[in-house]
Image 1: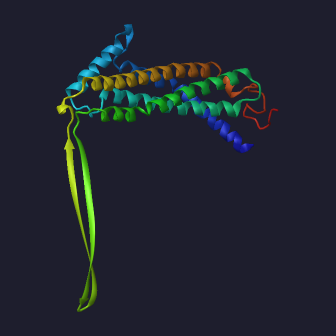
Image 2: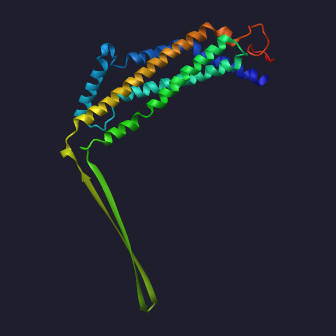
Image 3: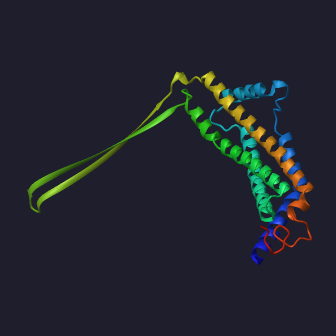
Length: 252
């Protein structure tokens, strides 16, 4: 059991670090949220967001990344990955300190799993953004489309009765043809622009919502961790020498 004692102590140390650095972590996350534009209050935020994206896409290179969404993508996914890792650390801490049928620990463990599931689902869902955007861009018919055709041929001939006897000769040749086509006279389709802008806007909203949800859940986790630290670290009390107290005996 000595080796497990070291794991329990390490898990306590890791959990304590998450708790003690929690205010700084929340401060950084809250700052990131406030720096993301388009609050969406009053129901006008999303429509304004889409209008701005339509203007941006229609006036420039549609294949150029949307920097507003790109920034939100990086911030949110980094935060989700960090919070998911922290939650797993706390789950390990609780799992190594929890005796059977202790209500506080069981409820906290469920809270951790529920919040982590939401974080990891948001990570999975948002990972599809660039694939969806690429598909939307492919549907723009005004973009030049280039096709390349390569033709290869090989011929074999036999010459008989030469001074060296029969002789086989092989000749190979290849040619490449490149064609570029432009549909709609190179004119951009306004509905495709709106579709791409709507996709970008929806992803921005999803990212910001995921970040806000993560921050809210993280606050609740830290609050529960702080209020119940002694019970979580020492479920049977500090004087108890069994499992869940840093002791070496097991509670059944």
